Image 1 (cartoon, rainbow, N blue to C red):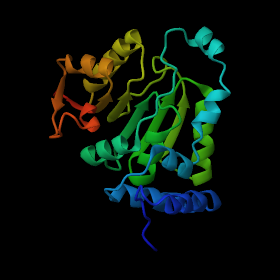
Image 2 (spheres, rainbow, N blue to C red):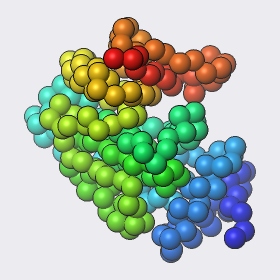
Image 3 (cartoon, rainbow, N blue to C red):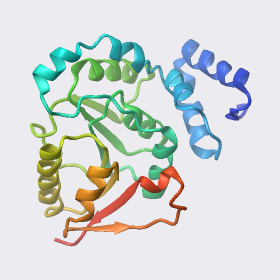
Image 4 (cartoon, rainbow, N blue to C red):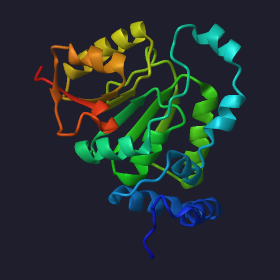
Length: 236
């Protein structure tokens, strides 16, 4: 198979990849895996189109007033994780087939879809907004991904005690973050877990937890990837 090209200065090549993925979804796995093995960069919008994610159109259809009435202070505004971040933290953690990775507040499924297509681990996304979960499941079924699950739920109402790795991309209001932290501590009392976090509130909260140890990976503090924080549970 001819290697895929990911150079930013080759928009024609990128458009070919988008068209190829749309015409033949069976090629999407190969495209993502080639990107994952490379050091090249693709704009998030290009990778979204390759996967079939069109969040801007989907978000326009949501009734913000209704969301405020339903979810109050919960964090329901969509904030997608950059694919460079996803590739980086998965390379650091190197999940195995026995791992179960939860994206808590999974949005349109970037982490779950990317991880499931590039590793053998199982990925589960928990998302509050049902329309987002529906879109994710449509993509999952189109690509025939077997190691991914999308769950419509509030994280406070769902059992994720089978998880071994948890990802948080600034997903919660303060009180919810505290309660999720308590849940994660309970899980850590039963088995070893790892957590990846991005965002001020999540990073600040997790850095103060005595049951966690932060693992530092050398990166220039000016590098945006340095805002990803890695934690592992201490022995129970």
